[in-house]
Amino acid sequence: MKKKMVSVSILGASDKLEAVRLLNGTSCDFIHIDVMDGEFVANKAFSMSLVRKINRITEKRMDVHLMVRDVEMYVKRLTGMNIGYVTFHIEAVRDRDIGGIIGCIRDMGYGVGISIKPDTDIGVLKGIIDIVDMVLVMSVEPGKGGQEFMIESVARIKEIRKMRRDVIISVDGGINDMTSFLVDTDMVVVGSYITSSSDYEERIERVR
Ligand code: DX5
Ligand code: ZN
Image (cartoon, rainbow, N blue to C red; front, side, top):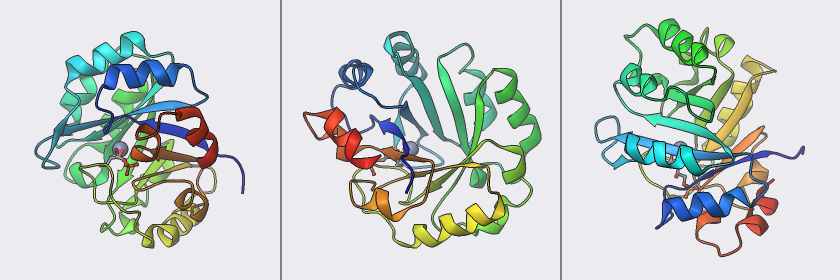
């Protein structure tokens, strides 16, 4: 299996800015920022003021995962940052102008990701998968870190790969040094497995 890019979720880190500083000294590819609005998911996380603070100190590009209903509003607030990808949920935008949202993210100079929850039929990605850069497959119910990887994700990822060969596939939830090797993805999002350790770099190497 080819080596994977690693995007480290700092959701579970007790001191998030300290986690960002530690990650600056590692080989990780992105820092994963979980923005939760308390509506699309029950929890709230990463206020925009915290995202701006992280933006000021990070030497890694951010991989922003929007778990929010009002995608347009949150996207607009991400202008001018050190961001690689902005990802939003397909479940949040079904009745909305998806092309407009994608255009807005591209105009800001960022890659576009679409995320899909574990219970959503992957058929809804048809058409959209061709106009985004990345698909973020949720392997847990979004909303909190430290949950167990859902094994059904392995087959879902295979099906998504058949839909489009050259899209970047990333997976988020319950990834560790075992589950990372069950999935054939380009990138893994890893939270608690890395942030619960005192040696981030060692854990990053083990999931690649
Ligand atoms: C879950 C978040 C994840 C989470 C991953 O809603 O999207 O990014 O932080 O954490 P672990 O790796 O602990 O499952
Ligand atoms: Zn996430």
